[in-house]
Image (tube, rainbow, N blue to C red; front, side, top):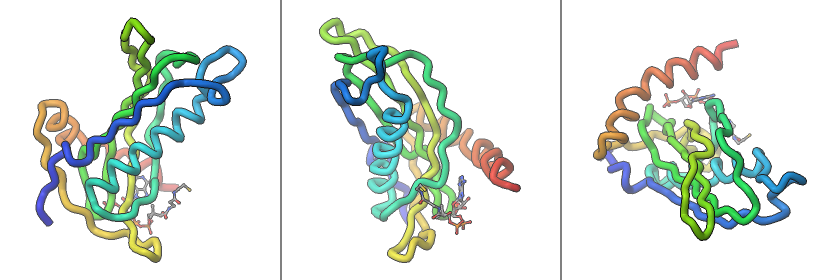
Length: 155
Ligand SMILES: CC(C)(COP(=O)(O)OP(=O)(O)OC[C@H]1O[C@@H](n2cnc3c(N)ncnc32)[C@H](O)[C@@H]1OP(=O)(O)O)[C@@H](O)C(=O)NCCC(=O)NCCS
């Protein structure tokens, strides 16, 4: 299979943070952020592979700064590396204050998506062709992260 440039999978979702996605402190629920991450990562993996995908795992997610009601939330994801049927997706959440436009990083995570056929059986995916420095660095360091995931999964 021909390598696919990272740019093809890059996916960005921009939303206005409003109730009912906020708690009594006026900040977004962590679970809502995870749902956005999952959706955007899935679209990135679908764009890369041209296949249906399922979420195999989330690496740890640290919420660095709160996203408040009235903020603009930006979730960005792209496929960094692939195995035979799995794709590592790097996803980043930031919040933007309106109208000043200041941006703060809220969370980052690596999410593993697996391409599957109509029976849910894993299917091969094309490799990634990284282009920017960030994409190349994430591509080169991915096998080590995948090794740790395999160790973690072992009972
Ligand atoms: C993910 C899933 C398709 C893997 O199927 P499987 O029969 O275990 O297949 P394999 O062991 O061959 O794994 C397939 C690929 O997934 C990867 N994988 C499986 N579990 C993983 C995990 N926890 N973290 C990272 N990668 C994982 C394997 O390393 C392999 O990658 P490779 O082909 O690139 O080498 C299967 O476990 C599944 O359907 N899980 C439920 C997915 C789902 O419903 N998610 C939504 C939330 S419940």
